[in-house]
Length: 224
Image (cartoon, rainbow, N blue to C red; front, side, top):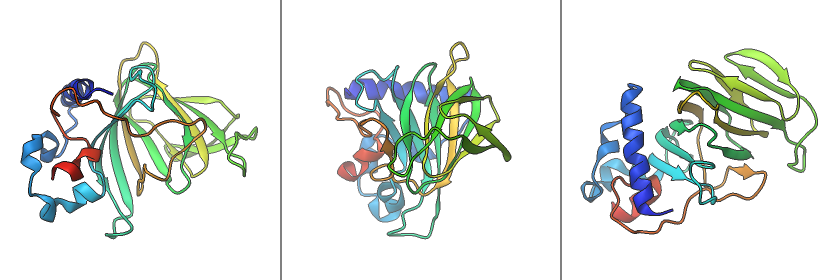
């Protein structure tokens, strides 16, 4: 992805978060130059990859297959006692996060506002294929079973709990607008805990065609 596209998407995201009255921590709006020399006091932000995150999953088509996230908090078993994570995400109409599961992480996906989120689900087989069996899940604490490959639709205020090994893909429902999506989970490790059903790039290669507007979580170690 080009840095200019990433800059534009983050600027749009800031405006959307504001319209949804969702407040990010103050450092979310820090200019790149202002990160210099802050590692001693802010190592948790850097080492646990908090902050802005944007990916097109290697598709070169962010609007069709992509996701913008902001990691608000996250633990790191190698350096601290925090066992949980929280993200806020923006999902566009028809904008897909491709089919994947997590080996370690259990998570709740929560629609915080905006449109509706479509989530398609499969259980996984022991060899990490798609199971034909029914999928067991909980929607806002209520036990449900759905058929393999079936979808649920979550509106604002609704959530689904996804256990380890449950394949899921999601996108914004057509005609409903962008979706503000929260995630509350165990510690998040995007470098080693995503099992995509079909290979997908998690972190984009960036063409630096202009200076960064905000730093991505993956930029921080270089700049700080």
